[in-house]
Picture (cartoon, rainbow, N blue to C red):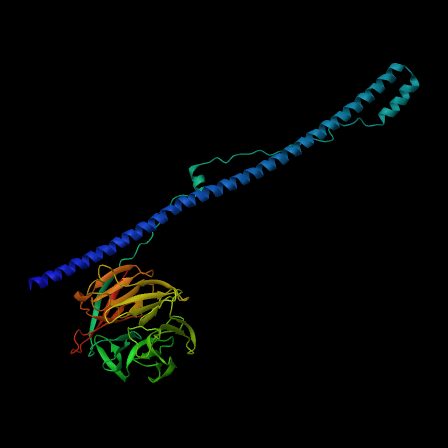
Length: 452
């Protein structure tokens, strides 16, 4: 008993150490982001300095050119005035000399003739062209600190770059089903959900209130399901080549498309109403051969194939068993790839089929017998990724880039053996669980409040 208690204490120490590792990752992330952020203000100051220098130089050059033009205008005016005055002076001296000669001649006829000549002519005016009265001068702006701030800019308060967000997960409601395991869950509206269990070959419509009430039981062996744009439900069936459609209005299940000879697996309808379907060859589980076919196919709502992904650019297989699929705000494809009965990973592809990142569990958690054992995956409205970890009774919350934000063992809140996930219109996380025993039929369904 003491050894058991010590093992439990050791487990708690391990969990706390994991949380410290995650916190350390957050600190390193913030440090990196701040170093990148802090370099930008200096870069912007340098750019602004150079910009203003260039603009000032350009403006000063323009002023110098204007001043030179003004100088040339005034100089030209002065030169013309000088020339005109010189010509007038010469004329006046000549006329003055002529009159003097006449006066000194004492000849009456010349005096009368000269008087008639000079009295009828105007004396040249030396002020025909006046001096300019205005010119231009440079008046420097009287600078002040405020003027420079307005011109250049200033340092102002702003928020630090956001590091990896803190995530809190709290169970706020729990329900008991009569299933051994809630294999899949789909929240259709605030009062209605669908859950399935392949052992019982049942798809069940439930009404959600203080308790859950069965509204309808449909005998069908569901592998996965996803809701369409018009609230119908697409169903991939266990060990079947078909995908079926459950119509909301009639409640009827009809054939939708076939992937024969392949078998349908994880299914997801994107926000753009595309269908993403995982497929494997019939009878194929984890043992891969050259003839194995493990891929993800994108279909339109008309059932026509748009794209498929099986190998990466290096001709390596992308998947072993694409068990669950979702998409995120960037339209990336996120796949739970099961690699064995107890192991798996998250594979994220862009729409070109390139692997953006993979996640195989946190190194402090996924060791030894307690390997990363993902069963389902969802993404939030802000792009965070949540994955169930069956063996460890845990939920892994990742950033959109695949960084672990938190690893939360939910056993102390009543969540054991988490299997299926969905997010309702309120942003609450629903977790369907295994009962923990093949003989028990009391699998739980939990509502989790997520705080970021």
